[in-house]
Image 1 (cartoon, protein in one colour):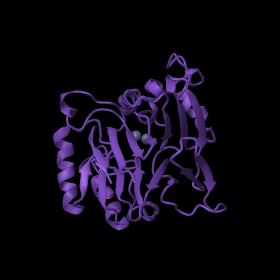
Image 2 (cartoon, rainbow, N blue to C red; image 1 turned 60 degrees about the vertical axis):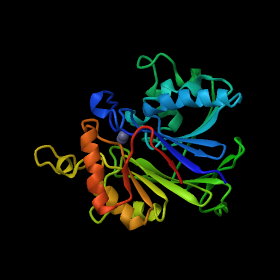
Image 3 (spheres, helix red, strand yellow; image 1 turned 30 degrees about the horizontal axis):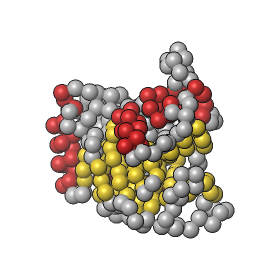
Length: 304
Ligand SMILES: [Zn+2]
Ligand SMILES: [Zn+2]
């Protein structure tokens, strides 16, 4: 079986920060690519998705293939997770197919909130005008998405009513909605394939005694990608506390990694105010708690 490949295209939270201070870890906002056999799964569409889109077009041409099929999973619809989508080149090519999944926001369908994110006068092209075929679905905690190696083999099942026993050849996507992010929470995803799994827990804040729902959801995962936006001293700064802002510290991320027995922890959604040295120090300190910790950087590629 092919490797489970994870590529990081945008690792920053809140807003993009190109420049000399962020050369090592990168300045683009959240976007991760998963390559699982023939399938491409994209986690969030921050500005990192722009370079990914150009690369997918280049790779497809180089392979002599005519079209791209990709799955996009939105954690939530905050700007730093959607702002790259209007510049995602594959969306403009009529032969391409995008299967887009994400949460409902305040009773609004995913299609509605994504359309809002690129509506005139904010952006000159509307979602309807993008030529690719777009299959859009709201996802809830009861859904399991099953994906085969054939691009059209994508189905949503009910985890309680349908028989969705884990088969190693199918990709399984599980989700649950966390309320640890203002104002409408965030979807946490677990993507499993070939006996391996990764958990994507961005834009989430730790709890006292650790996030028990997340611990059980992430149990024994190979890779946990966890929000670690703030240094502890900034999170708990008495003059300008960040508590309740919906983001974690590396200590909170390490606590989840330890309790859920994951193999590797990736610190993600770096604060735009932190320079390369600060993030490097966060990684070093986190390793004292959980040795298999890495701070995500643009270009990081993991094969599991
Ligand atoms: Zn964010
Ligand atoms: Zn957010």
